[in-house]
Image (spheres, rainbow over the protein chains, first blue to last red):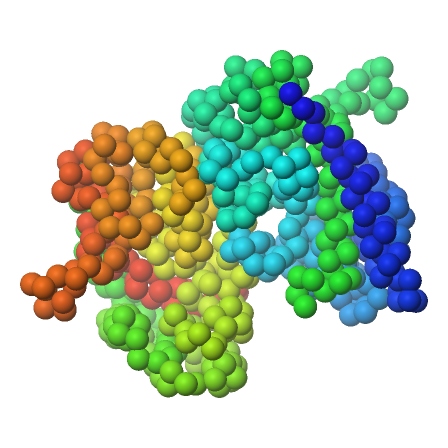
Length: 293
Length: 293
């Protein structure tokens, strides 16, 4: 059994990106720039955005955070997006979700120029990803593909159970892993709240991606010996002894599942660290105009 | 065992559409208009476009075919698309595929205004369909959903094997049938050329959609008793006794599979007739501005 060290891979990738940025800017060219928009004071959102700023620094990117009050209007946000779309020194930008109730997330996402949509949430990027064209792939699915690639995990012809059909994890993964390519060519089954035989489906899977957001959902009796288990769950569970007052729990009962696996991602330190570097990779792609030319 | 009569359902829908069009135009409003662009002399393409024109007539639509020589340039085609995008009396239009080698199909598809892309091939429509937003869904998957709806076939929690991962049938169906809704909420497994245990996957499926383009691929030993079988295959097989010199063969060995099924679509007369009416429905939606407002 091998533990997939997302933290190490993420650190490796940041070093690679940083090296590439140094090369690209050695002749005086400006650095890649990522901008984050954040609305309101949600603690988790603040932490995510801070993490993204930190990663930008580590990658040699310029970064900027545009902060809006909880009471900001949709029009104000759309105006800021229009400015970023037009700013030739901004390669990519993200709007940290969730947004306050009075703002339409979908309208905001669709206002972003697909060429700068490094979160990959715009329908154009989702559509291109779905049909296998170059696209910005959203952070978590892209990070999982990268882990599979870096650990040379065989996927072709493998049965893969994706637990959860969310638009940001389960659904894009189902599309990506069932496409031609490496990693790819999996026979994917997508499971969700209406799925009846989830235990049986998991037991016949070579690869299980758990993205339900249900702490410790996947237990040892659901996993075949030798399976690859990717845990996307990051539920905050109150923990009196933790400094932050909570602890991150994955969707996998790690202690009992891990011994049966060929590979498994821990929580924290598995998929989590990969999401931010996926965003960095997309920003570098935007800078290099790799997706849309 | 019940044979799903796509021909009858398609006829019913055309009558419904026609009735709605008569109502909508009773006060003197113009009729919906679908335009088809065809390049070259491919026999099958000519037949498809003729079928679409005929259906437009039956639905009370105005229709127009723009014919280009095989030697037409991409620029000429793009100019025609720009004109149709701008023409307020054209609700929707399609470019009949395949196109000659010297023209980029993707560039052509992406030039179509998504609001008029009644074939549903533009990445914006694919993306919106994937994440469950209102969208033009391409004809075959939309037609299959309609058959399931009209026959009140239960789908929630059912295991569904989709054979084939093409961007125009298998992949959109996987996305649609795994989404919330009716029909929907299926536990979908997508199978393709790299899938190893296809027989086992089919045998454990409540619903099988065969869209591989391999005549008579699905045999009785692959189907559980009581399954619903949807046959998307339409391979032209030479037949000396047929007037046209060929006969359409489905992906299902109908004679031996049908007796085991609860529902099955025949070929021809199953999914086929539904594809054209799906295009008609999308055109009516475009006229009523139902998708994009």
